[in-house]
Image: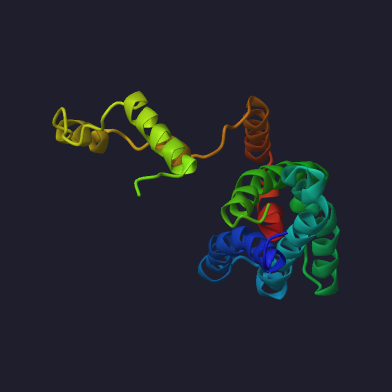
Length: 137
Length: 86
């Protein structure tokens, strides 16, 4: 393992959601305060702002330290992350009494496999390339 | 005393044989290298395509991306949930 590879793995992991968060937070804020969306998004924005990037970083540390030496695909490992994030996000929104719209809840069974595929692609091509760029794996 | 040790003699012989075996180095240029240099500068750097998009994306991943895109288009209610989890 390279020098300080776990710190670099963490940074490579948080990079993608952190960069994406700029667009997500801007979109949510516009919807809430410009278009007066009647949903208290500010209650749950902490989840995509804090929990998700950190989990990506920790997930990449797990991958680099445990699975990369065994030649396991980063995409497949990344695709498993929504299995942790989806219930966690649901629990956070319930604890903070965020009213999830009914049509979003109805789409949840399709949402999990879609999220897994999206995560597979993001981890394979974005996180994987960052890992290679930082010479972690 | 002009006596040479046998080791020195063998070394001289070896040097002579090497000189006769190797062609003399031509220190002068046989042609102008600048046109070739200009060609090299004008060429796209090797691997520039890979730099821009360093992945050879297999058809399977394109298919997955297409399926995801189509699913999101059919179920736009997924978008806020996906953004919330990314």
